Image: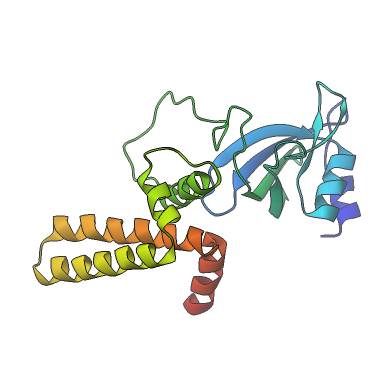
Length: 207
């Protein structure tokens, strides 16, 4: 849909604003809720970098303009009443001003289900350790030791996965696969390989 046609179909409120819900485009985790006006929406579509409208400052607000925690637009749609926007973004750093990845961390109730975004969370945590080292962190130890040490651990964990599988020990196999995934993610961060690049490659193979 053309940007101008889309903007004309949106129903802004009496203040010229519309609610914008922002999700991680890989995990679908809700990151934040903010407001946009016509100019913010147009800017977002043009730059492919999310721009909101700050009600407190009464001006446009490009996410991450001071923190560096920018949001790159990956998808945008609106609801059936055309009075709410859904943004799919690649979040750099954290979305919340408190330092949390998502603004929605105050849990009231949650079913005991597997977290579909756990791989992304572990990857982000490893990347955060690289950007903000923490004393005593095993992840920082691996990153500081460098590529050879990381590759040695990936090799060791691969062997342990094979042994667990050959021994028909399911619990041990699960444990060792998790170790292999973790060390592989450390390797990815060290070599600047992103989850998005893996997703694109897997998508090509799935076709």
